[in-house]
Length: 129
Length: 151
Image (cartoon, rainbow over all chains, first blue to last red; front, side, top):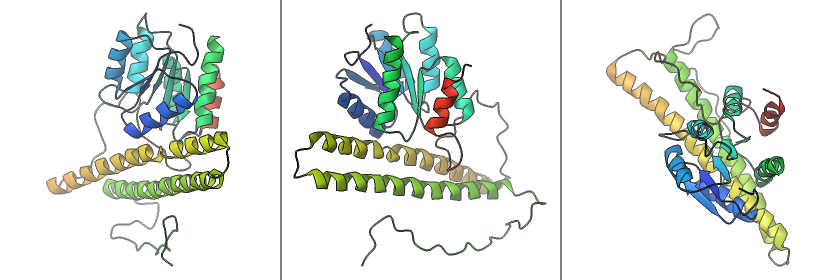
């Protein structure tokens, strides 16, 4: 899938405020095709129904966390190359290293600003170009 | 004039509670440790909310200054800043959830007349602790540094 603002993006968070914030930021960055899910299980089901070019996920959700979602995605042949950004309040070294080892493309710690989200997306699309 | 948010009231020195320890030679009961951690979480909630409110006000004042000008890009940036500042709602929610879980545990233990034990079940693969207290965890720059390192 060609990477750029035209790709479908899936935002995963159990907090409606955060989904609203990220969706608004993505629209400002030119992403028009943005879907949302409230936990990892719902996100995985959506990913198996539709091809997404970018996943932006929270970590701390139930019943499936963002970390578990990441591992499921990386273990799935069809989904394994999907760019994945973790956006979370978990900021300890163990969490960051675990996410990195599991194959996350970038890691944003809450609270964050629009420039941080843009720079991480740009880095992924730049790497993939 | 009545105070409108953001002004910190003077804090009275906290009186020593029964059971507080004045030296480092005695172990602090687990219950007291949990309650002290709860107080630290409450202080962090206040700080987070105050910081977010200040950012919202800064952006709103910026919008007011632009209202009669045709500077759409600056107005757009200010609005985006307002939106991201509202992320405090998520962080406050996570901290309050932690406090609620702690107090539930203390209350349940009190009601059962048992000692508050440390968790003795199998440790989670990766511990989730929510937002860090000031000075704990990493900021974005430190996380970027961790990411830039090879394995």
